[in-house]
Image 1 (cartoon, rainbow, N blue to C red):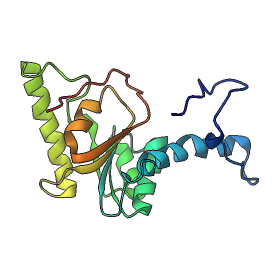
Image 2 (cartoon, rainbow, N blue to C red; image 1 turned 90 degrees about the vertical axis):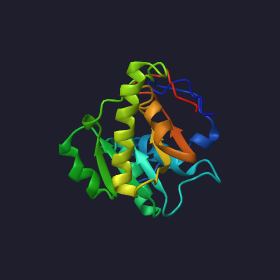
Image 3 (cartoon, helix red, strand yellow; image 1 turned 120 degrees about the horizontal axis):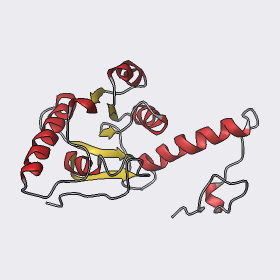
Image 4 (tube, rainbow, N blue to C red; image 1 turned 135 degrees about the vertical axis):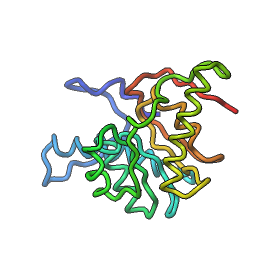
Amino acid sequence: YETPDGSFAQFTNVQAQQLLPRPQHLTWEESACYTLTLATAYRMLFGHHPHELKPGQNVLVWGASGGLGSFAIQLAKTAGANAIGVISGEDKRDYVMSLGAKGVINRKDFNCWGQLPKVNSPEYKEWFAEVRKFGKAIWDITGKGVNVDMVFEHPGEATFPVSTFVVKKGGMVVICAGTSGFNLTMDAR
């Protein structure tokens, strides 16, 4: 898809569709910041036509106070969708709400992160109970029984099993990275 084979080099080969003219009022560094995070967030939410975020839909945003997540929250709000931000500390709640999130969930309140435990094992039962708690926290924002239409996923290994559980049937988990690891596991039932 997009394979420039790295970006931390003096020179790199890219595809034509990856290039944009630099706005003259921005420095090279300022321009790079927007194209790194904003363009990635936009492509994740709206780059899979016709399967893109629509007004009124709910999207769960991991890392809502970070670079990708903060742009995803703002893009969702601008599109008329409802963003639910996931944070790692209460000190980030007000900031994420100020970006336009409909609600915020602190991931530290749950213990269901990492690779999926072996199905039907005691560890799986514990994990599943925590995931259901996390899902209920989403329902507290979206309404009982209303799963998210889309999950904005970039942590990867630590969150992917939960993302596939909380997205509604027929929904989308859009992913651009694996900051917590690339070994993705899920229960396909």
